[in-house]
Image (cartoon, rainbow, N blue to C red):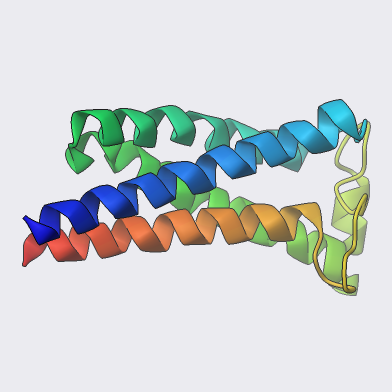
Length: 141
């Protein structure tokens, strides 16, 4: 009984994280007017379905239907970390210039000298990925 409650709580936290990340990306583009670069679009494509995937898993109380979420969050984590490196590592700065209409090394925000939009996305993807792995580990016990 308690294990089921813990699993449901973790799925709800994952869903909330995906929802906050989705709303955050929409805030930056629709309210603040920041045009997403190509890597940002890829991260959005990987994040937005997570709201539906984990929301469905939460409603149906079945983590098994959320396996695509683990895959999408893992890929999203890698893409957003790469995007962050393009912004912050001088050796990769030139790779960001060839990204399209908006260069991928553009930093619309840079809080505390390190918190950029790809940093926020990678944090969200990592939280989702790690919590999903934790759920899988708990399910095997």
